[in-house]
Image (cartoon, rainbow, N blue to C red):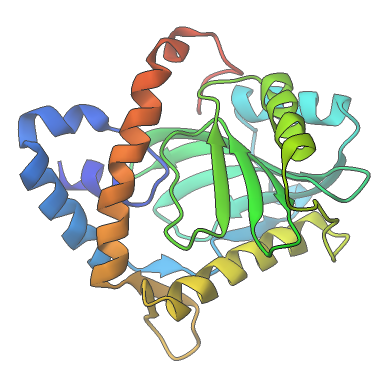
Length: 247
């Protein structure tokens, strides 16, 4: 039970069925505690050399094939830096340098997880993020999410392009040209913003790890209801074939 709750606190898996037996109040108290105790990586992803890459999941293979077909440039194979999170995938950049794609899957504390993010920078310093994951939240408000649960890459790309064309703030190109460097900068900025806003505190002198403060944990609990709302509005999408199994 605690393992499942911890996985939910990481934002990488979605065991919402736990709300019923635990009761909303008890669940939120436990989620609050886990969010404050859990130590997170400031830079959650690491490069994986090609010779060390194990077989990618059907989900990552399908997403990567579709990303490649849309003309995106391959960057690196990636994996999660935390040993208990068995996530691996690929990272890509559009040819105009304005959209990063990260697709990955695996297990979070033995719970299956799959997620694809399309991220584009705006000139106000935030990022548009379109994803097929209803469980990801960002208390820093640096990432502005739109979710299409269990969508194929073509669906996500179409939705992301629509957002880009209607966004009042100008969409800019990333400063770096290497997809992994872009990914690293985004998470570095996010961690810094969390600390500056009092939502997080570094857990070591090297600032390689951080934990939520009480205020940050409250944001996680509040964001849970937004995530549940997104899941409820799109519950029927869970029955779509999607891009393949998570692992």
